[in-house]
Length: 353
Image (cartoon, rainbow, N blue to C red; front, side):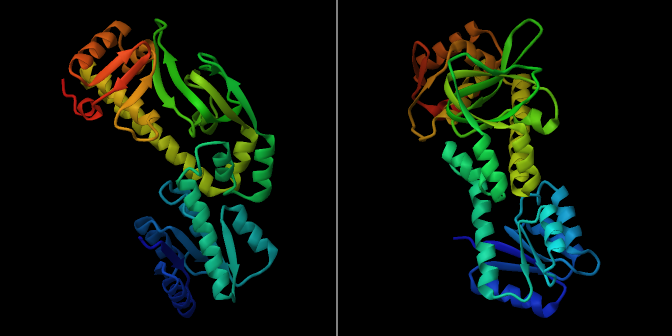
């Protein structure tokens, strides 16, 4: 198992080496920096799993280190523990208010250090793994933030059931909630001037959606509609922003979600520009297969209307039906009604024409 990498930023040589030794003996990989500037450079180049940083240092103090790393998306979500000889509450409040995850006061016991490190790494790992794909999971995800905020968010959320083809929000609506899909399937889409629909994303149980407009402080740029009866967790936007402001790990997680969405949309644009219609139909089938085949079965049945599939591809429904007929003749799929049974996913992935 790969060792967790921990960066220790401390100007006192004896203290720095002592902390590194404790971490190494506990089976962590310790890297060190002797001042704030070198610590920032090391954090950006090494991307450690956790940072322990002294507050009072020459060149750049711990507050400055946290501020700089908090501005960089690549280091924003790294758990950050302050190390300080000062126990005054004002120093603790300042550090935690800036987004630090914990603090340790010098002098400290070895177990105090190791307990703090282990707890922050566990909470960070819970965020990375998504903490489950249901409402209990989202509560675990939220619980990586601070206690009072967590209680408020969980207390204030409500669950709403949506039926097939029901809209959750429409393009140009003002955002009110962060949405978490507990059960069912959702699509987001845009309409062109001719009233034709283009599906921008598909969502499955365990996915957040509707967060882009919240983060951009803008109206929705797309509509969201149910394609399989859905159970949705509604988190008020005020609670979402409170949660974001209280915990840098949560901010980092949503930045990663945004980055993934941007990458996906870039690939869709390239495909529309350069791929043949049949290739785009094959890719759309692969996209839906990979999104909804959560058990990774080789053969899987996609339940999706031809109109929705055409909206993903960006072409006429008749064109999609012709391409599906050819794939059926080639033995890649079988179809009956809405259901498309994928027989050879690798053939669809590698389709070239």
